[in-house]
Amino acid sequence: MKRGEWVVLGLIGALALAGVVQNIIHHEKGAQDVDRGLPFYTTATPELAREGSDLIRQNDCRQCHSLWSVRNVMQSVPSPSLDGMGDLRSEAWLYQYLSSPHPQAMLPSRLKPEYRMPSFASLPEQERRTLAHYLASLHVKDWYLDDIKKSEYEKLTGKDDYKK
Image 1 (cartoon, helix red, strand yellow):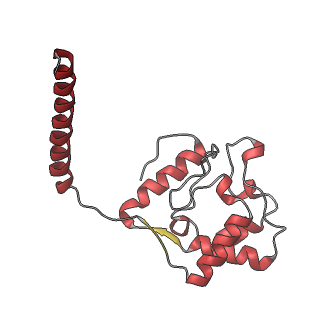
Image 2 (cartoon, rainbow, N blue to C red; image 1 turned 45 degrees about the vertical axis):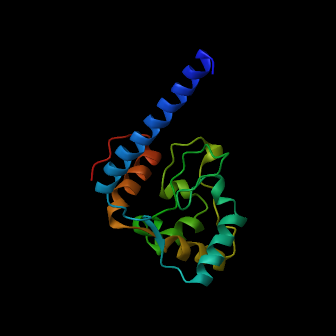
Image 3 (tube, helix red, strand yellow; image 1 turned 90 degrees about the vertical axis):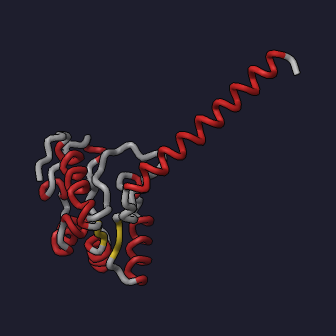
């Protein structure tokens, strides 16, 4: 082998060794962290989950909102996540909000008019009830609830001074 080949081979070996050491350090550090699992869950029946998901898809809610912390690749609107909505709002409030001809009267938005929550008052009553029931079934585990509240506060106000 030529000298340059030995240098390249040595560099590759050093990088591989550095990667192994980094993985060992990360693994030991990770062993101290407790995996609390996914913070999101729903209390919806399978039928309600299917109907609610279908309505969210049909009404393009994911164009602005994330669900299960999954965002649309093209999403740029800083709308509140739907995760934990059942911990933030009651089913009755959600139904009233979805039925309002002017949702901003209930929950003012700092977003430009074209990005504000549209009215769903024209949806059939049963669809609004199903959406409200489904959204109220979306919860987060207690250890994640403050993060959800902080995120909603920041998105609604544009401020990062949330206090528990």
